[in-house]
Length: 127
Image 1 (cartoon, helix red, strand yellow):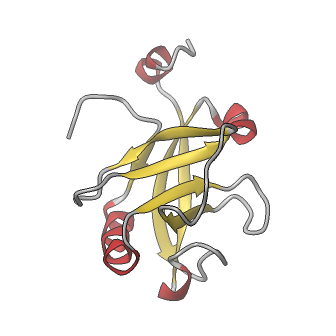
Image 2 (cartoon, rainbow, N blue to C red):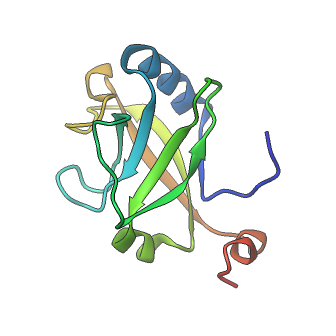
């Protein structure tokens, strides 16, 4: 655990599923959807299956207890709406997003959000 503040976190339940999915699919990454296809679900892909570009913002890395961290991205336009928000990736029972790797597991990733606190606002230059 480090003392660096982050815009993203992961629950232990989601981390456990990510460890299982990494064993099946290799290193993973997330892209926070902006509302197309599967609403605003966090989409999880094997690295290389979803290509980020200059209009994507890296929110941070998730440490789920594996050798590789899981990078989390969001589109620049969506980031403008959510820049004051901290996101936590969680998992619940249900149908996974169509293109996201958890789809066949009977679970789906979701986002839980809260407003950034004063320390976070300062760190990210938003106060």
